[in-house]
Image (tube, rainbow, N blue to C red; front, side, top):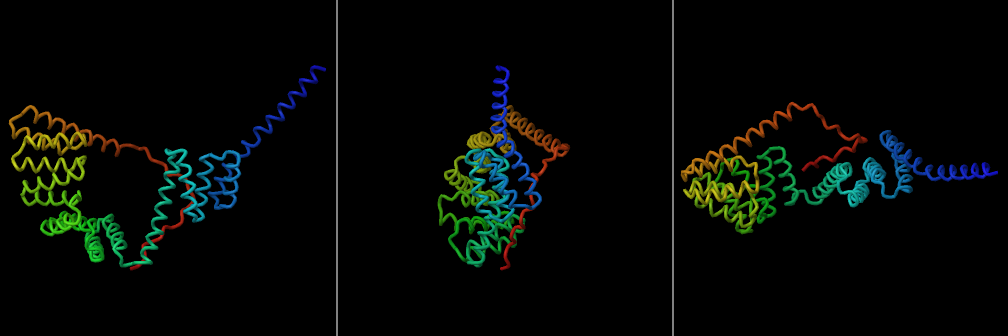
Length: 324
């Protein structure tokens, strides 16, 4: 009789475990099957599988991600954005969610750009977007045309004035660059970019003391700029103030320890003061950084490691820039 009792209890426990595990196992199967359906282009089936999984595991990032990918495949980018940001609220380091969020944001931004071009094709913002796109393509002449059009639409844009100054400076047209930077500084006296640009032009024009003034203004706007610290040190060194230059070079390498040029100029400043040992130490550090960079490049070129792309369904083609 006792044997029959234990047998009955065992059957009850087995039934209970079967019921307990059936849901999760079936849900896991739904998720794997949903991913397969997504790759086959069966988006409705993939969505159903993901939603069924979420009923069992409401916070499962894998299921939320599958649902977001379905939304992307179907062109529902706003819904995908909401789903992906939901994942990242609970898992900020979820690499897949960050990857797909980047794709979604790119597409959403292009949609907004299309709306902008449709509503105001000759607006300041439209020309600015086109100018930045040309700069990304290293097409400075076309970028300058668009920046000029943007400036015509908004003559007081500090961003555009600085951009035109940068173009002229990199083309060694320093007088024109100074004109644009000075206009930007008039509009925004605390603007870092115009102050730095004016300082760089002054250095090229062999006016180190004037460069010092501009770089100090740049650093007032951004005290943690290693580039401005380096440039100020360079200007001070040219103005025959090596001790002050050394102080700025040290601040630069404290902010950016791998800045090789700072160590080179630091050695030159120490030599100017007759501090030979300190100059040698600065050069030694520069050479160490040069070797480290060279070794890193060689290691990268010799590596056979490849980063496999995430397997995703074909993304819809991104909208092209509208004709103007």
